[in-house]
Image (tube, rainbow, N blue to C red; front, side, top):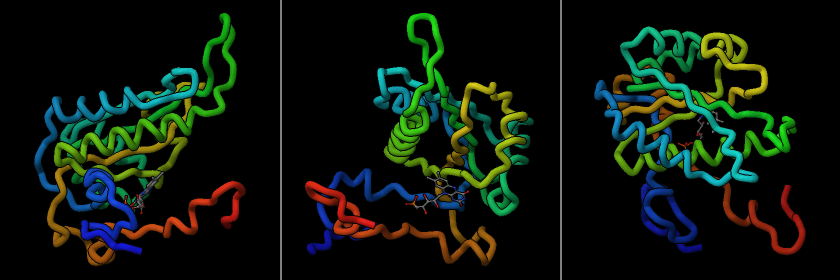
Length: 198
Ligand SMILES: Cc1cc2nc3c(=O)[nH]c(=O)nc-3n(C[C@H](O)[C@H](O)[C@H](O)COP(=O)(O)O)c2cc1C
């Protein structure tokens, strides 16, 4: 295996964008401009989806607004400690149904498609020097209420977005984790012809 020098050990060369993105917990005080935030939404908008239904929806709040404080309040406490320093929080919802000839039918891929939108969002943010950190550790029932999510929508994930800060600001318990993570080797992930993984 050739290890290519990058912030992360790569088995194969890829665009720096993929290797450079990682999920920090320390953020600076810098507010995010509308231009950069909406460029990330724009990238997410262009993700592929089954039948081009585009089931993703986004709800955001900037730090310093009452909505941001409410958003923070739905996160698990250990996520609150660091996510409150982000420039903005974004939630991704997905619509679970789509219309066929006037009738709403289940859309099997609504979460998968929203996942594609999340990655596009994260990579576009990263291109502009913004870090993102997905947040699944939250009270989903409370979050649905706070955000006003209708029953036919899934609440998928929260995202903290901000400029990466100094890890010295983090509590001791989080400092050690403040670095790009490794990944499983491709040999464990890719099979030819028939699934041979575990
Ligand atoms: C669906 C999802 C939920 C996550 N939930 C949390 C979370 O609640 N708290 C947290 O600190 N990180 C959370 N993460 C971040 C992951 O732990 C992180 O993406 C993973 O360890 C890989 O690290 P990297 O993004 O730095 O490459 C979540 C990521 C995803 C994709």
